[in-house]
Image 1: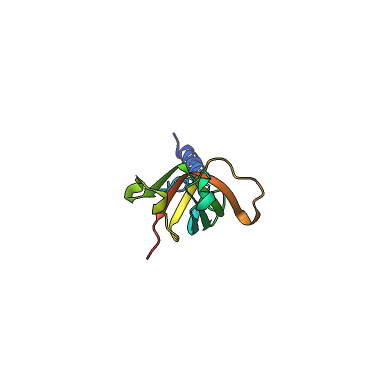
Image 2 (image 1 turned 90 degrees about the vertical axis):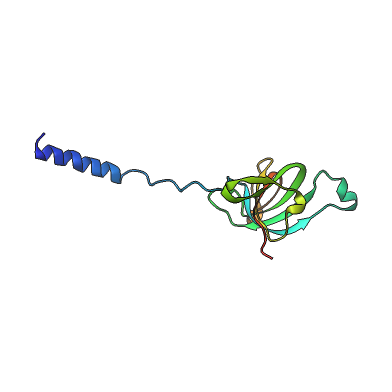
Length: 138
């Protein structure tokens, strides 16, 4: 192969490499979620409300991220919901609703898609999973 042909092949290879898609973001240690943020309020049903089929309600304030659907939510947590505490290395440890405290950073996966047209990015939904990402600093 002559020098000119080699230069053409080399030039074509450089152009193809330059046009490649950028590398995707590195994988995150947290799975996708419907909402992620700080727990600003926790409600536990009392009296007649205790007859409802949920163990508690969380108000979560965050921001919409690439892998979340909403910036804030009022989340009902049913007895069937799975609750975990994220530990080092991305491991999940089983937790209880009582382990969640105001100021904790959490993320939730909803049982079904929240209604469209939520004002201000806030939705109300029932969680199938709550993951405590970071405990509140005391």
